[in-house]
Amino acid sequence: MKLLFDQNLSYLLVEALNNLYPGSAHVRLLGMERVDDYTIWHYAKDNGFSIVTRDADFNERGLVYGYPPKIVWIKSGNSSTDYVLGLLKRYHADLLAFEADEGSGCIELY
Image 1 (tube, rainbow, N blue to C red):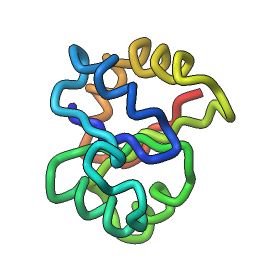
Image 2: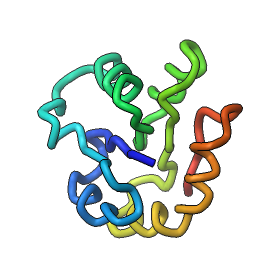
Image 3: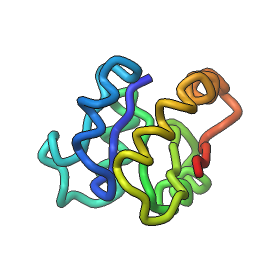
Image 4: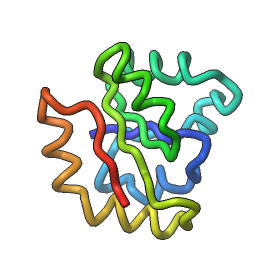
């Protein structure tokens, strides 16, 4: 499972999670920190990423346009990078099952 981290999450997550989510990226590391959600959405779709974000915008886009890309919505409020790192580690098996489930487009993590 390749994750594309939105600008509202730390780019440091890419390296910290490389062993669990190889091939993941961050919009900042791709030079996309100032592009709109439409561009990020299509980049993720065209390149096989699931988008990880704190915003509802991507889920709303998915409800209108369908999935992929799939959305991992971090709904833990203004939590630390370490907290988000822990979530993505703890729910690794669930996220892999989510990726394989063709009927699911968004998963919420708290």
